[in-house]
Image (cartoon, rainbow, N blue to C red; front, top):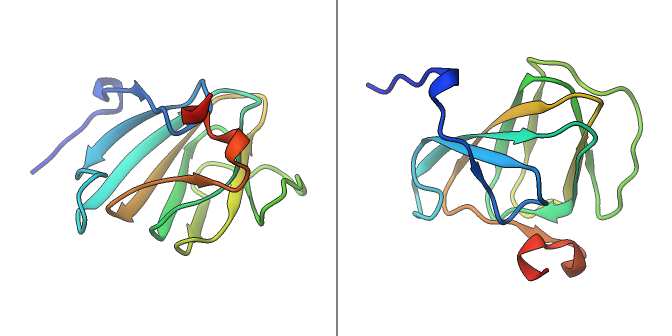
Length: 129
């Protein structure tokens, strides 16, 4: 059995995301093939993740704050930000992006490893800066 309380999560910077984002691994090892992974990602207010893909399908639930997601290789912000409890599912290798509003947002992401992120525009990749 695993029990993790929100105030006890071990948040860490994620070099694969633009500066300011943090992740906490709740279950699994994102580097291992076949591992079921559950993680939370925390994004600051007025933050954007540029268009990218993952080698895995993912299921995302907004835990707190407000955020929105778009699909495609170009950012086009439309509509209202979604609220806590909203769910977003994305197939593997499908371009998408996200942004927060005027408050911090926390999402919970489920996928089967190995994890990874590839930015549509290589210049957006924080690991190459």
